[in-house]
Length: 222
Image 1 (cartoon, helix red, strand yellow):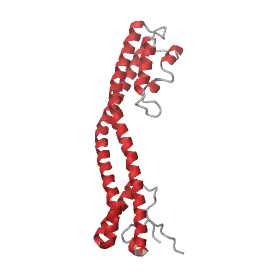
Image 2 (image 1 turned 90 degrees about the vertical axis):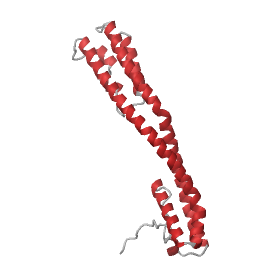
Image 3 (image 1 turned 45 degrees about the vertical axis):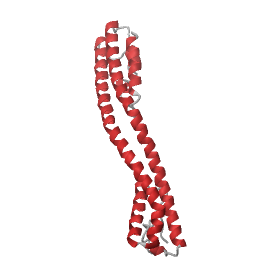
Image 4 (image 1 turned 90 degrees about the horizontal axis):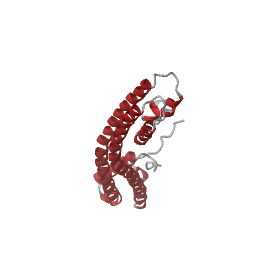
């Protein structure tokens, strides 16, 4: 017995089978075509509308994400310069407890962090700027501390502005991804219903899966 595609299959595969079914049914005509159009055209039209919006959202988000990556790289460069300047200003120590407070574990935490979290980087840089400006290091003059803080704060502000510009487009894309997946599940349900309608109309398994792609597992030969 043939099988309809699994309900947990990728959305692209489900929609691909829906399109293939509609194309085959249209070619065969008659009630095969009529029933397929009744069940599949509405959900396919809905999917195509969502897909168009999703593609537009992706086109909007991708260049913004590229700007975020570029601005993050500039922030990392500024951070590296500040870290070197501070280290030089306090005498290039091999070990320094106060410096460890400013840069716990090095500067990596204030950059993209271990998980590549760019969205949180502006906040981390802002905290570093506050620490630098507070004069927490006894060997770092107030003028140099404030200059370093201003440089970090400027990098944080530029990155924050770029990150904020991506929030709505990314959220829109995320929502549309979820809607797309939901519509694909509905399309699978319609495909299952169509097979039932074909059976009720008296079509054989072979005739049905001459229209609906057969996704049954191939049986091993003994």
